[in-house]
Length: 153
Image 1: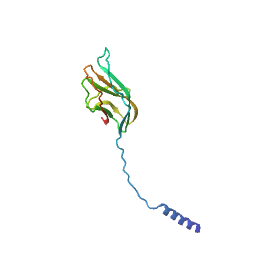
Image 2: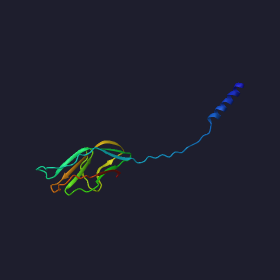
Image 3: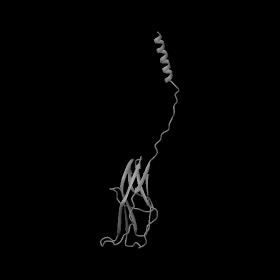
Image 4: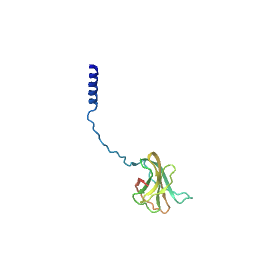
């Protein structure tokens, strides 16, 4: 009987010890949009010289740049635009990706690549092509910034 009494007392003490004070906490969770784009590389200066006898357009290509994209959103696109206009008869083109095609850049956003879906894309090749027609004025070296943007379609 004593054993039963001590067993019951022991069970009550154990249940009391484990029934302690209980508290709840609510937490709020969210996932924000991630759309990051970065470039690496440094294009060499575009200096065009002699056109070929078959083509009156002088051009130079640089493929030293790569692009990295991180996004958790489907259906993004990459646009690019120049910060300033180019001299008459001069054009800059850009393409992104191995399968990309060249798009002529201007001071307005130009779509370079569409349907970019969530994920990480590393070392996408970026190529620039500078063309100068025979009517282009000879002049000193100038610089232009190209603004790339990753946005939803």
